[in-house]
Length: 290
Length: 298
View (cartoon, rainbow over the protein chains, first blue to last red):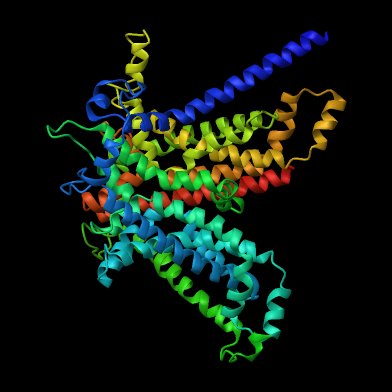
């Protein structure tokens, strides 16, 4: 009796692990083949199976992707776009986090009238698909004379990042004891002083969580970059999508394409691997109160 | 102590707090509400490339609903959306329950299941396009294993190309569903398992009749999150299928962006946007109601 029961349990465990390992393979395979292809050269990538191991693995395709692959008629590789993406991400995430933290603090701890109304107005932006606002924003920027500039792309990123980030900060600050700011006010500290000296030092964790959400969001964006960044500030995602690397005879060089793809994926991937639990909190933070 | 001797701010801190919110309020009112209204207004005009303000009533909506490409795109929203959400939930739930059985290497597995969420839909699309390409991809691989007639011609088939979007989409988002549902499972009181053992109820029946119904609010959260991905979906389609073959995998977002910028038909795009906005409003209303329903049930 107990032996059949035990063997049933063992078969169940084997099935369980078999399923989990198959699932892990399903999730890993696309990344693995992109990585394998990026180590090959153009001919090998075109003729061999994607599952073949590279015969002489090297980083040549990465060098081509970085320095000399053609995006449209511009043959300087994606390195310029990489730095564009870095600049955009630093500026947009930095400003978003700063505003979101100040907003969250103002909404959570000052008993403002209509704080909830303001939050609700803001949260419309988290649910309405942002494409609804794209054309009017293009018109507004065009009228303002800064369409397809750094200012335009940073503004839209901040605009669309603020709702969820403000909500994250606000929900965190609501949980802080109100005595904190009462004590500061007795000492005569103003709004910004209280924020800087008392609130900011307590906010490190929530800054990491919100920062991860913001950085991956800005870095991974495609549509806003396509429409608002213009040629000068084109982000990496846009260029890699239109990158069609070819060799001298016009045959597609998939090894270079896959190198560029992996380079685009790398920053958020590293952020994910090194931030662990914070990343999970970041990507699910928006969902908690959704 | 140092604070009190500094110059006193002239404005009361609460006033400053209100002023701090002012730029955001302006940005919201102009950027969101103004833009949404503007889009709705434009849908009632004959604007082509630039806005024209002449009332044409519901003409554009009529034209839109009679446009075959829009019909396909709108339908695809539900085919892609239904399959994507369904499989993400199913796959995510199965993975979450299995990981909850005290498996070894749980955190490594979780890391593997979740990493695609860190990648953009552009990267997701490029990787899957490469995997599914007929000459050197999966099809070629399976043929080399001996199945000479194996065809996995998903990308070039108008009927089946949409499934590539579902596969790539589920690959991207199933991990997120898994993590959210797993957190839900962990928060369930462990007493119920002891009680079920005392009563001799098998585990699978506990999951089916007790645990999954308890997870309902978490499931609704996932539903909202995944629905938002569906309604916004654009990059994945552009990169993986380009909306093709033909317009077979077109989605509203692509229809709209094409009509705004490439085809310079702002009126039609705005009408399409307005319909999509109504769709989103309907989804949110339903989810709010079902959440309330779920709470009432528990």
